[in-house]
Length: 298
Image 1 (cartoon, rainbow, N blue to C red):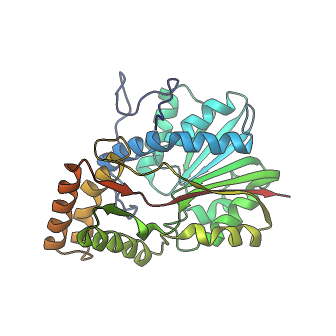
Image 2 (cartoon, rainbow, N blue to C red):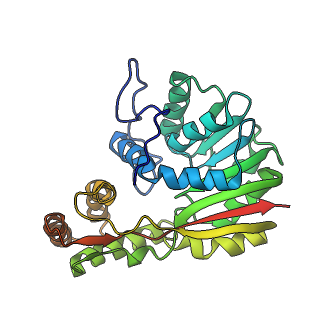
């Protein structure tokens, strides 16, 4: 699946005087906040950019709109949104990571996108921020964020208050994450996937969050306009999408071991199973199911 946007600078190709990547900080995601994770996030955004653009198109984003990107991270989706809304619109990115916000603001300046601004804030507290007035945004985009927060209902409610009448909340997130598996099947692989999901739950997240989001949207006074599954199909060894989880293992498996969710032996068994399937032309992977939702404010 091609997701390249010829109008967007490639995050993997440094330009002259490119703003530096953030250094590690004590305020981190479960997945970490560091230069290696930043590069992974850029790659991940590229792979899922088509799904994002299709959702934005379905929601009717256009020049002059005001867009809110919750949990924006280093700002890769925000920069795309800023190009769509243009100089007459605005994009506000919110993230709890100070290094990522600093990186995104520097990148916005570097890319000549003054309509994009980024602020440090907890997602559930956005309604208290001075620069986020109630009923001031045409749409809000939330991707792979609500699966990590302890109180997704509070976040959805806070976003709803920021939307204009007719404004839309766009969400892309996981449902039935632990069904992720490879063929031929591997107990070692599935044991680690279960450990990943448990680590998210123990940090207050929910790897099946999309199952709860329609009700949370309705409880926030929104109407559901669209709900569907994003299906990139099975990933096969050597394909671009196969490399998406591969970048995840390299970063997160050592963290799982350090945190005690898997043993060194379980990590070794997983890596052997993964290496074997990478070399098997008959292998394929069922990726973690992704769903999308559009909810509209009356």
